[in-house]
Length: 423
Image (cartoon, rainbow, N blue to C red):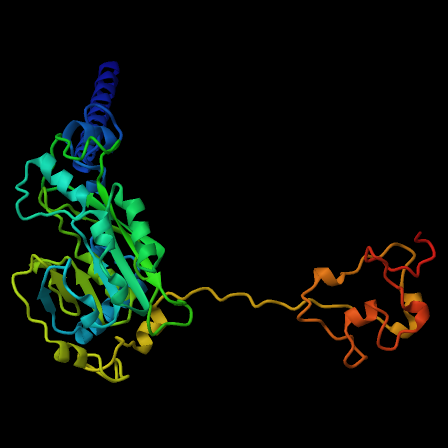
């Protein structure tokens, strides 16, 4: 009997040890799959994994793709779907102009609702050079040359500007560019770059000018004109998308940007006249006019292009791309899209009523402070109840029916004088 109990206990211990080993194996495999520090360390240390392999921590963010991002948010998912359907119907045919932007007269194109600029920054040139990439087709512009672009000639009274500025000195220079073009910075979209398809321990950033590994870029957003999201629903639909884009970095040396930015812009701004500067063949897109020296040819027709926007109609009155400056909307979209919080109305101060005929009986035997004229809005004086046309300033000055005995009710310090206990 004793031997049997010992054998059962031994078997039970072995089973427990086996289960424990299996759990550890599952944990280690999970950490491996997530890119953690799986060398005997039971935690997800993405930073150490990046140091050892060059694979960035953001590679392991889950469900960031647009088709997965809103699955847990049915209303927002439905909103995106409905807006994309309307945008697809209202998108004008793609047009483009192959030109040298240093000499091209931008004023002949008219005014636009959205301007997107992806200039050939010096930062991109340095990055490509460090990688040993052929620099023949890439000619960087200085910030002074970019500033000389007459972007102000393209901007309508109300307009949004999206400007890619890289991750270095462009953050400061870009803000100055917005100011010079009469825009106010209102947002900053960040592109977090993954490297799932191409990672190594080699550092390819501009080590002479950076202290950290740059794995993101910025797109500054400028606004021109008085646009209020609460009342200008025909022009902007705010708070639909976030200010973060997560996507794969293009091949080394490329300046290609994530296509998602186009969709963010189109869902946000309801104006249909959109232009992109420094575009290439890959940037041709329905609903946009693209300009750039690296385009292979041109197909722009001024008269046909402007006919797309004639009239005041919009969706759903117009189902196609011809007619109207704005995209339009539907009741379903209006019900689903996020709304701005309602502002609290300013409440006018309530001034207590005083019976002037019996004022001595209403004043307590303690000093009483009252608002003096220099504490009030002199352009909006409040009338005294019961005395038409008389204001509190009149009462303080002893006018409008107050006898001479009460004409000095208030001294120079704003304190009522008729109390005998006040010296």
